[in-house]
Each structure stands twice: as structure tokens, then as C-alpha cells.
Image (cartoon, rainbow, N blue to C red; front, side, top):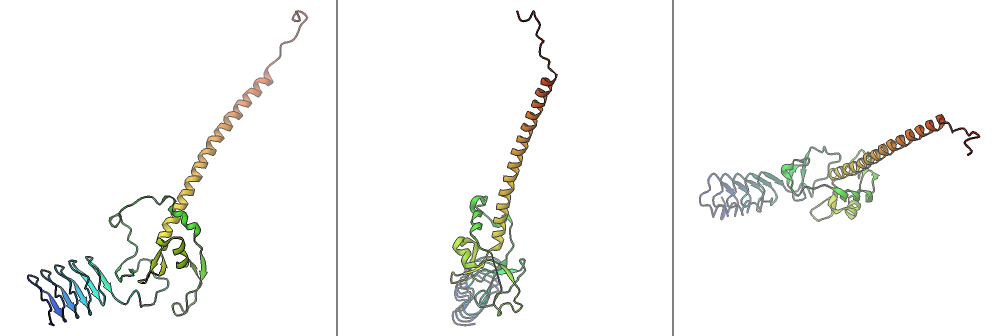
Length: 242
């Protein structure tokens, strides 16, 4: 329904297109639903996608099972994008770390994923965590429009963190520092703790070795003192002078 809707479709089945140019580029994609002018207009072979709104899902081309509501989305399988969430909705103070998170691109996802399956280029933090010594913890209260309780909070200022360690902040679509990646800081703190713990262990081993050496020396001195106390000097006689 709409001018050029599903215009390029050749073999795709079970598609629904409502709006001018909706699913116009689709060729073999199946079971897509596009409602809005130009919705899923760039999709070619992607299937089971849903787009609602003008231009919604326009960046989805070959991905499968993507949901886009009022936003362009990206070509990532099994993902969900909702416009006007990251930029325009007020932040939630004290959000549960296991809550759904939203990237600056509007992509929804879990914030606590840590499996090796999602990572590459894995290597020890080593000295990189020493940047923590440049951070400045502060106390503060959120503005009343975000937190009416005015509860005292503790943390870091994103702009200050960005100056010391740009990779430790989250940014808004304009590139401005918006949040602090505290989960990354926690890992760096653990690295610094382990480094200090290893130093303590090494110092403990050195002290233990030195203690054994001291005990050995003390034992040797005691033996020498015992020998000296029991030893008798030969007596001089009139004949011995000769």
C-alpha cells in the first residue's frame, strides 16, 4: 500500500509494506513488516524485520529480526532500536546494573555481558590501570528535575574523566561526555589491587628468606659462643717456655 511499496520484490513472501517507498528495495527478504514512508526502504534480503515510522529501519539491508521504531537502526541481526530514547528521555538515577541499556545510536542491549564469546584482542591491563590515579572522586547531588530526593551521591564527573582517560566515558550523539564507564573502572581497580598484592607476596617471600638467613647466622653464632665457652686454653709450664 503506497507508491513504490515493495517495488523491487522478486521472490520474498509474507511481507507487509504500508507507505510510499516502504520495503521498496526488498528482493528476496521474507516476513518483513514496514509501516511508514520509506520504512525498511533499503532492505534487500533481510527477513523478519519490523519497522514503524517514516524512514524507520532505512539502514537495515540484509539483517534478520531487527526491530526499528522511529529510528534508522543499523544492520545488526537480532537487535532492537527505538528512537527518542537516548537523546530525549531523562536519565534514571540509580538504575539496576542488570537493566537494559541503550547506546548513543539508540540500540537496546544488556549492559553486563562479559563472556569471551563477545570479545577479541584480549590482553592484560598491565600498566594501563595507573590512569586511575589521575581521577578525582567527588560528592554531589543530581539536579532536582532528575532526583527529587536530593540524596547525596559519590562518583566522578564525566568531563573530568574524559580529560584523563577518554575511553572511560560514554558519549551522547553529539560526542559530549555523558556518563562514566564505572564497570571498566572496577576492572582497573582490581588490576591495581592484584599488582599491589603481588608486590606484598614478593616482599613476604624476601622477608621469609632473610629470616631464614638470620636464623642460620644466629644458630652459627650460638655454636661458636658455645665452643668458646667450653674451650680451655693450654696451661703454660716451666718446660713449655722452652
